[in-house]
Length: 100
Figure 1 (tube, rainbow, N blue to C red):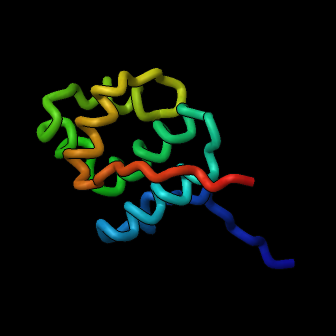
Figure 2: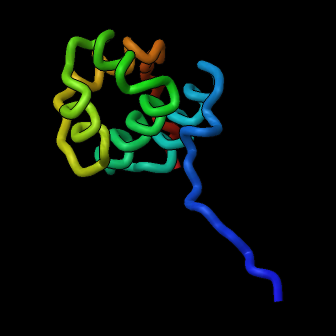
């Protein structure tokens, strides 16, 4: 019998371009509903793909505090979210919701 080796899926490994990152965040925004922790964790995944040390330098926020804030367990301020998205080169935009 052959042993099958599995490893945990890591989305960050598949986010190679700015477009990948933007599409990933867009999909997470659509999936999250009102779950802010889900969005914070998605930003954390994008941050890991781009490099948390560089993000720390670009935002002026500590690397450890970024890991915590973007873990899905933290509660980042909106100011932190804006700093992170700006440093990641991701632009947030609004559009009206479609009526059901």
